[in-house]
Image (tube, rainbow, N blue to C red; front, side, top):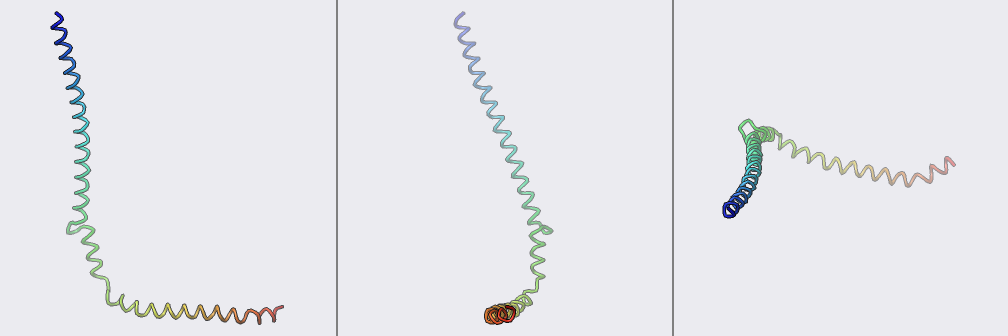
Length: 108
């Protein structure tokens, strides 16, 4: 009889080990399914971006319609204009510093 009990305990231990292994496999399977869904969602986003009617194609079309030559000439005008305004600002500050004592003498 003790032989049968030993064998039953042995079988129970093996069943417990198998149960733990099956549980671990179920958890891993759930993680794999979740990762598969995430990868599938990423590919769908990629396909929507790169599709012929996707966002990237629309960006390319929009950039192709930009007036590059006109923008180049705009910088040619904008830089000298900005430098001129900067120079006028400095001249106004210098004039204010020079005239401040005279204005204070008239007011004071």
